[in-house]
Image (cartoon, rainbow, N blue to C red):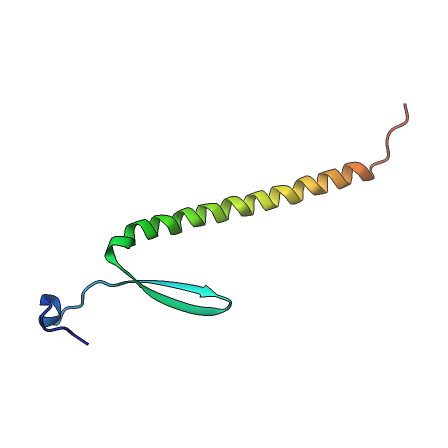
Length: 80
């Protein structure tokens, strides 16, 4: 509901609002984010995405290393 004491509402304008949506266990939850937290929260999300990318790259490398070790162990040793 519009607050007529707020200038933007009185003029019929909308004011910006920041919301954080998160899906946990298949359920979406949305929370209002105070303006003071918008910038640090955006940075935290950006950092989290970088961490997720690094974890994916590490997992891929772990699988490659494992496969290389298994393949080396399977190769018969050459007779000298």
